[in-house]
Length: 326
Image (cartoon, rainbow, N blue to C red; front, side, top):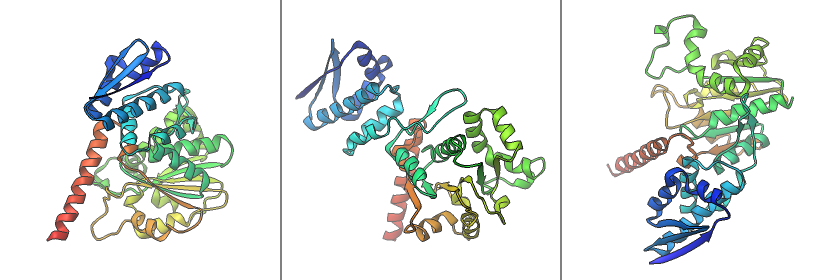
């Protein structure tokens, strides 16, 4: 049996670290097979394995760090702390705090929540063109839109342009009601939602009417040169080779481009190769182009999203292994 103890500074800190009904502590206890309890300001950790007890202590210290930086400790943060402790990278979490990307119209600060998200934001600020690749729920598009809004508010750019390829993922555009704009709006809805949250619907509508903000299908980009703009291509895994080349060559002076996608969710016909997959290979060594790859640890949605992403990755890996054996 191994024991370690920690001293917390106040009852408020103990309450925040332990969480409502001890939910945070229960997650750590389950992850490391330890027992954690408090006596006054002392927190004691006990377990059969000394290494697991030490890791649980590191996880608790990480939660204390969240508290000391004034952050609310939520389930996603606890699970992320556990994952980072397991790979010995818990000290990197402190680098995430303090980076406020943007403030929503309701006054809520938007910050990166993982080390991967922080690196992504830094890469976008540093480079003219940035690729953000990873599974659903990692904040690829949301953070890019937040950085675009921030750049516009600081007068670094004059326009925000957001686009997506209108690829039919099991549905037919022709069967949807309305004109072309009505048909493609469902594909652009996630971009509208992010802009509404950051700018407010009224402000967004005014900026859109003045063509300061443009949300349009990728086909509308052909033949244009985009100066003084922050341009985001979402769902880029569904671009063809020709579409990706066309989009990248729209880049004008004093502009930034962010290309986001998930190469495990390609909806193109099997006969067509993804423009995103090809671009990542062709452009990887070009200066001023960054490539950021997210993992399931960067998922900031419901815990099940992480589990689903991990399960699919494991299944894909085993399928490739089986294929080689055959």
